[in-house]
Image (cartoon, rainbow over all chains, first blue to last red; front, side, top):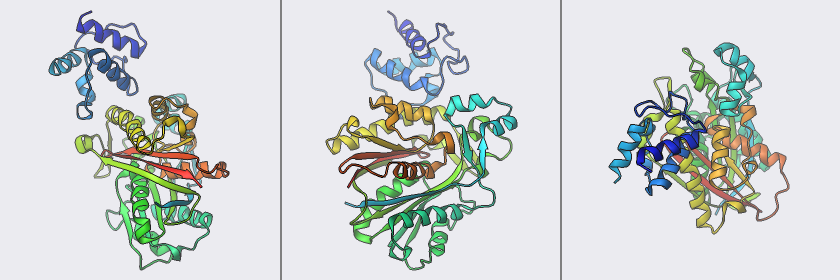
Length: 77
Length: 309
């Protein structure tokens, strides 16, 4: 499964919604994520991609869209 | 290591229900409960932070069975005093008839009582009995126009107190951990009377830092979260407390909660909760460990571990 598909799967799992947001669509504004789903999504990203996101990177804006999540994961490669 | 001799609390009489706020905000009362777990909160009429602190301190000293004249130090957590300085600590000392002991203000918002308890536990052996008070009037800050519905529903007013004694009490303090991280200091702040909160950032950081500091503290004392019967956490949001319980793999009911009745009273909340819990569960079995935890603006956070004696 490619990276984007994995991210989307995680978003759908934590939001419990089978929506497919555009890559540049805000996950918060679209109602897919709220304050309490965000930590779940980050934990799932860490597990799926084998990374540890440091507290200093825990800025919600970095994970607001699929594109931004991809950029963050890219920066951690 | 020091002891917890007693707790005390004081909240204003006026009850502000979700229905009352709902009418003012144009949001359903049920929405308020769903996003926060809060059903009502207390708001002051004319009282000051010192009035609330004095009332809580009196209850605490009475519960401890000691006179104010026995105190060696007072630490007051308050970030909502309308006066920049002096804070309410010296005024509280004066109200208690004390003019020769240090009375120090701590302005780290929600984690203030936890920070003060941690410092008092370290200082009590050297100084003597230390009264810790958290007193906050959030309503005068968050109910200023224009109202932010996502913020003003959360907060209430009140004060809590705790007496830390060097050699006697009903619980022995085993240890504490406190920490600060200024990376996100802009995300929760009160500046020029304007309250600013990036809720997503606060929840994200708190969701990680609170369970982690609790786990670190317990590990240091060779305890597991499942060994802790009661957690007394800053009453910020019921959903956050549930999340911390889940992260520690303990039942949510182990986290004492009174947020439904008082809302988030910032640094007062943890001690108000502790006072209620202690009053409702007076017969603690010897050796039963319990754990405090708080997180707030700064960000400042920490945990404190005690056991009943």
